Image (cartoon, rainbow, N blue to C red; front, side, top):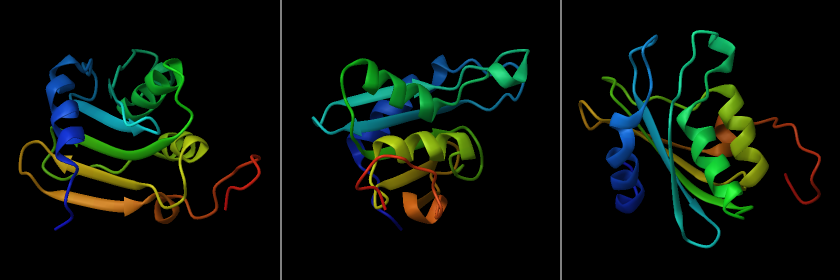
Amino acid sequence: MPVVPEDLYKAALSVIDNAYAPYSRIKVAAAVRGGSGRIYVGVNVENSSYGLTVCAERVAVFNAVTSGERIIKEVVIVADTDEPLPPCGACRQVLYEFSSPDTMIYSVSAKTGRVKSWKLRDLLPDAFHLAKGKS
């Protein structure tokens, strides 16, 4: 079983009840570690116009960027589902913008404790990118 960074897991778990999920009824929280080592959190925020919904992973990354971070080193996702959830395609692309292809993504079920993990490159093998040095 993958070893989930405990500090990121606790940070995500501490905000999961703040998720706004009246439509899917699936609460998700995420915590990311910025290049500075600081931790940033986010929760999913749904909207009746579904396309305006924002996932927890993107909220966490955007909080990091708002604070001046440009590098995401690790990601932990916690969902109140029976199985761990991988990030959606939009989140994968946003993570790629600020991460290395070898960045670890961990997902934990808050109900069962099950864990899955991936390298970002395995979730998004042919990522779109314009920045030099990304591979």
